[in-house]
Amino acid sequence: MRTFDFDLFVIGGGSGGVRAARMAAARGARVALAEVAELGGTCVNVGCIPKKLYSYAAGYAEAFEEAPGYGWNVPKPSFDWQTLKKHRSTEIKRLNDTYRALLDGPGVTVLPDWATLVDAHTVEVDGKRHSAKNIIIATGGMPYVPPFVGREHVVVSDAMFDLEPFPRRLVVIGGGYIACEFASIFNGLGAQVTLLQRKTHILTEFDEDARAFLAAEMKKAGIDIRFNTQISSVKRGADGLDVMLERGMQLQADVVLGATGRVANTQGLGLENAGVALDDKGAIVVDAQYRSSVPSIFALGDVSTRLQLTPVALAEAMVVVDALFPDPKQPARSRRKVDYEFTPTAVFTHPNVGTCGYTEAGARQKFGEVTIYNSEFKALRHTLSGRPERTFMKLIVEKKTDRVVGIHMVGAEAGEIIQGFAVAMRAGATKACFDSTIGIHPTAAEEFVTMREPSPG
Image 1 (cartoon, rainbow, N blue to C red):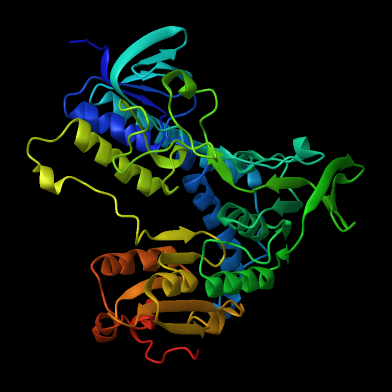
Image 2: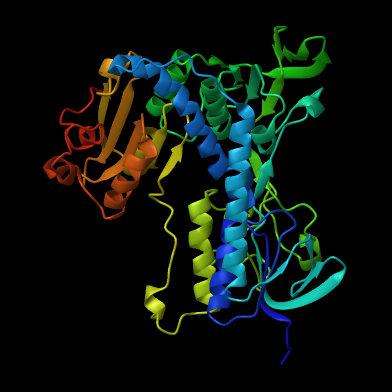
C-alpha cells in the first residue's frame, strides 16, 4: 500500500480551506495547507469583512444627517479616510492571526507559498513536492474585468480598501452586488458616484421588484445609475480619468472600479497535470460530494461550480471532512449535506437587501401558481429622521401548499431580519404559520407576519 506525506493537502487558505484543514486535523489526519497570501481568503482580507466595516462607516454619515430630527445638534462632521483604513487594517491583521491559531492548534502544516498540482496525489510548493492521499482545492474566485481600451486604468474590488487618496469622483462599472455595495459605500463616505450598468436593471439574480426598489433608493441617495450603458475606453486625462461611453458621452473620474463579476481562481494551479475537468467558465466541475473528475481531488467554495458564498464554502468543507475523516461518534446517516434551495443572502447596499428562496419569476416557473404579498412603507425611524428612505418587503407563497417559498426585503438590517425567517423557510413554514405568529412591535420585521392582502395580479 502506498504511503503519503499527508492524508489531506489543502490548496487555499480562505474560509472553506481553513475549515476543512483544521477540522480534518482535529480528527487525527495529517494535514498541510498552502496559501500564498494572508490567511482568511477574499472574505476576510478584501471581501465580506472589510466591505461591511466600510458599510458601517458610510452608515454614520446617514446617522449624523438624521440626528437633528431627534433633537441632537451635531456640528458638521468630517471624515478621515486614513483613520478608517488604519483601523480596518488592524482588525484584518487580528483575523489573520486568529486563522493561523486555528490551524496551529490541531497541528496543520502551513506552507506560505504558491502550490501547484504535479499529479493526482502530488503538490509542489516552493520547489518541494508533497504527496497526499486526498487534495482539496479551495482557491476561491478573482475579479474579472472584460477587455476594453484603457483597462489598465481600472481597479478591481480588492484595491478599494486602500485607495490613495480618497476618490472625489468614482465610476463603477457593473450592476452586481459588489458594484452596488461599493457604490453605496463610497456615496455614503462622500464621493460622487456614477454606476454604469449595461443591462436594464441591477442585481440580475435577485427578485425583480426588490432590485427595482433598491435602484430607486440608491438614486434617491444620490448615486447616478445609468442603465443600458456600455464603456468603450478609459484614458488618463488632464483632470483624472476620462471615461468614454459607447454613445459618445464622457465622464471624469478619479477612480474607475471594474465590478463586472468574478471567475474561479484556477489559473496556474497545474490542474491539467492531474486531469481535473473545468466547465466553460473555468470552474472546477464537482459532483454531489464535491469530488472533481479526479477521485482524489475535491473542490469547494468559489473555485467550484456551486454557489459562491462564504457560509456555503464552510458547509461544503464539512461535507468533505465528514466523508474523508468521519467522526466515530457521528452516525453515517446524520452526516452533513448541503441543500442549496433556501440559502439566504444579503447585499450590504444602503439600504440593505436580504433574500431567501425563489424570486417571483423563479417561483412561477418552479411551482406554477403563487400568491404574492408586497408591502412598502416608511420605517418608524424615518418619521423623525427627515430622510426619505423607504422599506420594501415581499412574500411569495406556493398556492397549492401555502408554503412560503420566497422572502425579500430592502431596508435597514435586512440581512439580520431575513436570517431568522430563513430558518422558518427551511422548516417548511406556511403563510398560515406566518399569520399566526405574534409580531414584535414596533419593528419593521413584524410586517412579514402581518401582511394579509395579496398583491393584485
